[in-house]
Image (cartoon, rainbow, N blue to C red; front, side, top):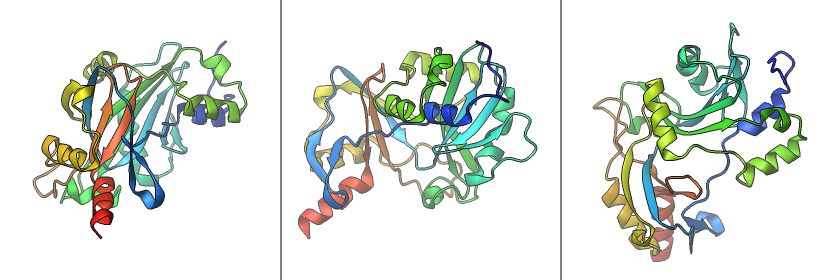
Length: 256
């Protein structure tokens, strides 16, 4: 089946390539407080910095075209003179999308965290000069796109949220970053799952020890406070996030 962006179902493409929800390592309970339940990991666990920016997508399509998107919507296509200016994604990533090699019959989705500038309230932690940066944190390659894009939107959404997207394992993601000249979100450690704390207080201490300040400062004027750590198995079969603010909020309420 030949692909033509001019006749493609953009709603289907958008849904199939959205980044799915990632659970917190400790479960979220009432009013955002953490519970004692944890995501269970087995074997080696990779820790990467969770950057506080905006989730962005570069979607390379089988006909050589591309789309840029935020987490929720598509913002620009190759050849557009004007793109949606939301969160500065198009202006930051258009040249990168143009420079990338074609997807060669598949749909390749690069997920990048765009940060700094005026992207989020936390931008000041990365820059005092409104610099903008981006880091690659995940990738999906859809080989069976022809069938997928003809499904009802509700079915595509359910497929996505139940883990249907074939995310790249760590070796492939690392190779892609090297080949495309991209920086990955900082790799912090690899440890055995048995070493992950299951106590909320101990996990807060673990975060502070493993990531005392961000490794993504764009200039010396950045405040340096990090958002948290993403935990994942090297094959990305299991993934969870641990954010400083969630642990701090929970521990404050315990002592209030």
